[in-house]
Amino acid sequence: MSVKRFIFLGPPGAGKGTQAYKLAELCSVPHISTGEILRNEVALGTPLGTQAKSYQEKGELVPDELILDMVGQRLSESDTQSGWILDGFPRNLSQAKFLDELLEKLEQKCDRVIDLEVPDEIIVERLLKRGRPDDTEEIIRHRLQVYRQQTAPLIDYYIQRQLLVSVQGNQSMAEVTEDLQKAVDLNC
Ligand code: ADP
View 1 (cartoon, helix red, strand yellow):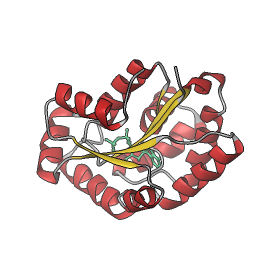
View 2: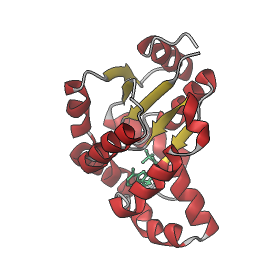
View 3: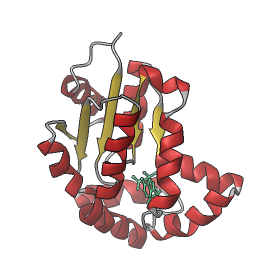
C-alpha cells in the first residue's frame, strides 16, 4: 500500500473531523486534528492547554508559537511513516509555509489538499446542534469570519501547487465519503 498524506481544508462544521477520521481509517494512517489535540491539552490542564483555552473559547486561532512545535513533533512520530491526514492545520499562510519546510526536512510530500465546502447558513445550523462549548452562535460566526479571512486564502495557495481538490460537504455523510474517495483516487 502506498503512503497517503492528505490535508483537509474547509470551514468549521463542514464535517472535516468526521470525514478525516473515516478516510484515515480507510487508509490506515493517523488522523491528526490540531483542534482535538488542543482540547485534550485543555482537559489535562497542561501549560499548553491553559494558554490555548482562552483563544479556543473566543473562536480565535491559537497563536502559531503554540501550534508549530506541536505539529512538528506529531509529524515526527513513527506512526506517520505510513502517511497522515491533517485536520485543522494549516489554518493560515504562515502555518502553510512552516508545513512546507517541515515536510521538506522530513522528506515527505503532501499528496492532496481536500477543500470541503459547505454554505454558511448550513454550518451555523449544524454547529448549534453539536453544542461544543465554542459552538454558540456568536462564536460560530466569529470562527467563520476567521476562516474566511485567514484560512480560505490557503485554497489559492494549494491550487497554485496543483494539490487542491474540492468536495461538496452539503450532502449525506455517506455521499461525502464516496466523493472523497473519488477525489483522492483511493485504492487502499
Ligand atoms: P472547527 O473546525 O469546528 O473550528 P477545530 O477542532 O478544528 O474545530 O478547532 C477548534 C479551535 O481550536 C479553533 O477555533 C482554534 O481556536 C483552535 N485551533 C485548532 N487548530 C488550530 C491551528 N492550526 N491554529 C490555530 N488554532 C487552532
